[in-house]
Image (cartoon, rainbow, N blue to C red; front, side, top):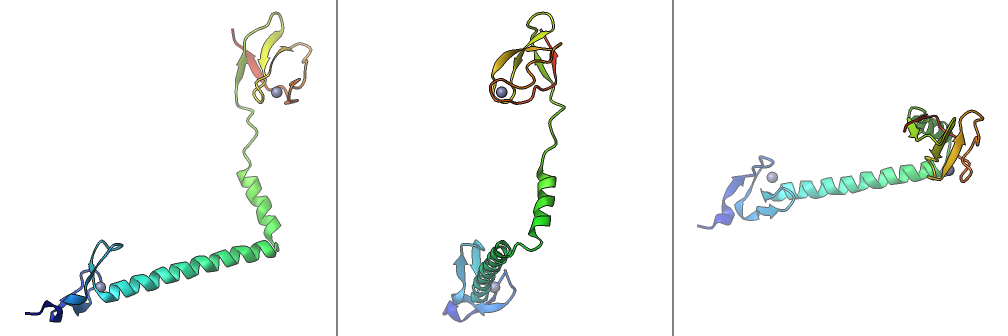
Length: 136
Ligand SMILES: [Zn+2]
Ligand SMILES: [Zn+2]
């Protein structure tokens, strides 16, 4: 008996196909009929074309920045994190009304005069003095 002449139903698509024409497909991870393989190929081809189309679309957007600015600005507003005022810094005391401040930006340590509010910025990187608490 020649098995290649037996028609069997494909478990993937339900179509009938010649038993001998079934192939083990690495994507389906099972035996599928030639129609399934064809379907898969055309689907992959379509995916590729869709990606190509999207790419072209994005490139055309880059070429013509009409309406792009507004969206850009919107995205920037959404993405921009709020100023981190809530971070509670704490530094040890450096005597009466003074603190051993350490710049959170550049880690430069210096003595901050709380009463005179000096210096007003980090002497090293000019980062404004943040709110902090004295903690010994
Ligand atoms: Zn099939
Ligand atoms: Zn600094």
